Image 1 (cartoon, chains in turn red, yellow):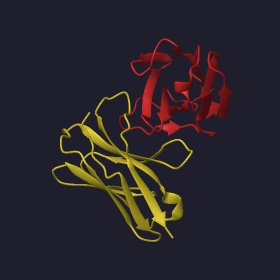
Image 2 (cartoon, rainbow over the protein chains, first blue to last red; image 1 turned 45 degrees about the vertical axis):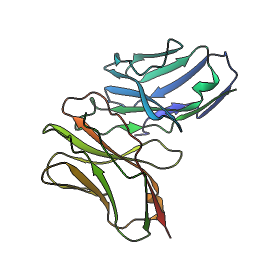
Image 3 (cartoon, one colour; image 1 turned 90 degrees about the vertical axis):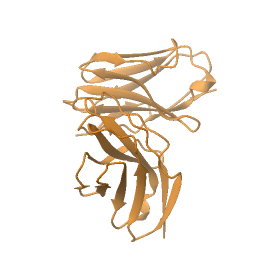
Image 4 (cartoon, each protein chain N blue to C red; image 1 turned 30 degrees about the vertical axis):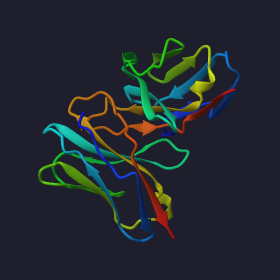
Length: 115
Length: 110
């Protein structure tokens, strides 16, 4: 298995532009998680899905952020409009079901820079 | 979930055992202890988890005290590639999400 695949690996954009980050979870995994990592705040859980349904989006910073999971093999995290403070590494992770007794497998992340 | 306390940083010599402590004094009976690590510029990687008994796998050993208020992750023969941030996380049974703290930055020195 190729693992969790994220794209792009790096994204540089200007303030105000729309940014879309993509994630392909491991086949057969039913839970998907989006995390954001910065030096100041560490790893923060933004949102997670079970069986393509968003369960908890309380970590999403504000309305500029949205996430979708149209099918079991694809998810997007969109920022519109982007701001410099959104600069961070965004990780996607998946597991068979939830976290208890499970391993989370993380992608390589998307390094986002908003100028 | 119970709060965990870890040292901010640790050093270990290559080839020696690295022992990473974690305090979780408020842990309850149905909460598991998980360890993940994050090597620079990579996503976090699962290492091991346990409830009451000590656990061992190909990566590490997890020693949980009898009262479950603390645990130690042991990397038996540390290599330079083990340099990473190690996260100790307590997860309640049935939890749907994993919340990371600040972790311990482990540096393996040649």
